[in-house]
Amino acid sequence: MTNNAANSSEELSTKGMEIRAFLVLAVVLAPFLSIAVVGGLGLVIWVYQILVGPPSSPSNNSGGH
Image (tube, rainbow, N blue to C red; front, side, top):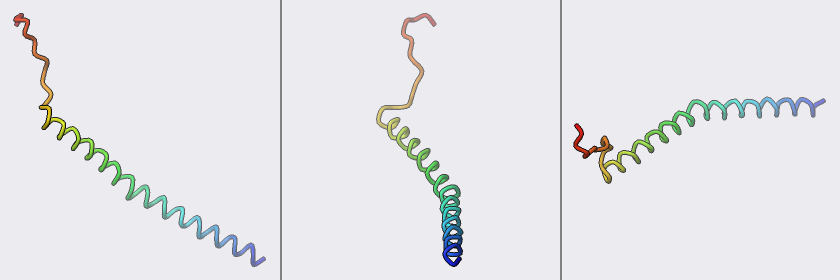
């Protein structure tokens, strides 16, 4: 019977650790990673445009307009 009590307390401890890990992932890590990915992509595009130039409309030199 003491073995069952030890197993149930281990299950509660494990379940509490799982909930705590989920909250850390959902509340801290996911927003941080999404901000880092969007910011990193923006930085890459910004540096690319500094090196190559901003996007422009295609020039039509056919003289029709």
